[in-house]
Length: 302
Ligand code: ATP
Image 1: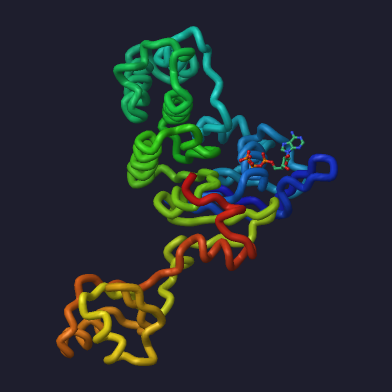
Image 2: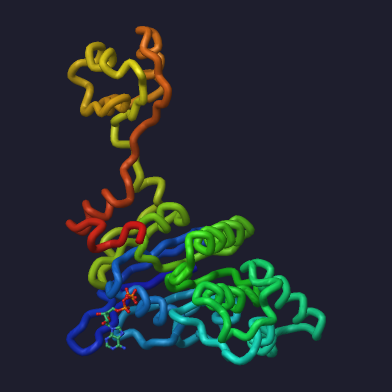
């Protein structure tokens, strides 16, 4: 859906995007994760043909960008920093104007606008002027505009910026639903938690360079340790001496490859187990490993 080869953008002495090889596949919810200033917006703008690359190649839906942008853009929905709208007009009117060149008759257009408003949760409040919208509502209106053409691919720059926790969840649920219905989603984010909850594939960018790109499930591999919660924690220490990595109240971390087998072993020795699960690497740990710096540079929850 998106391929870039050695994509580079230089602003004077600043290397905003540095030889990035993106590979976004059909069906992905691809999260492009990096701290503020790491080049995410610049990359998104290049994908959409809004900014020329200094060097490198871009293909979106199999066609070169910017050369074939006019042919590709109608199949893409996009949202880049602060979507523009006429502030004195209502959200609905803005969408109607935005959609004016769309296919079909008036009834088709009305239905498209209503569907889009519905999907982003603006139906009912769409007749207010945009000047009265909160930042989150404006962001949702931008997303509604991106959805008007029922795109195969969504390219979104920090889509949850400015939203409250409820708004973030609504957008997350919406993007997952659209993705499950067949839309490939590419989004940038500086929030680890958002990427963990939303992404199926992640690219980690650090000072313009793509330092890692992989499926999230593969990155979050098992650590070979098991987390156990038990009211008999001291008994576990006695039983598995040498395998216990840490103990804190009822919580015990045990070096063991198989949670089910460990559970049977503990229960067989009269240890009551209230919770047990294999430990997985967190995305934060992955980021730390590949960049050498953690959540102070790549944001955790704000
Ligand atoms: P943020 O989330 O804060 O927007 P970002 O990861 O999207 O950050 P970019 O906005 O792409 O990062 O910026 C990457 C680098 O390029 C920064 O150092 C920025 O100052 C620089 N930059 C971006 N746009 C321009 C421009 N038009 N002229 C000069 N420098 C720019």
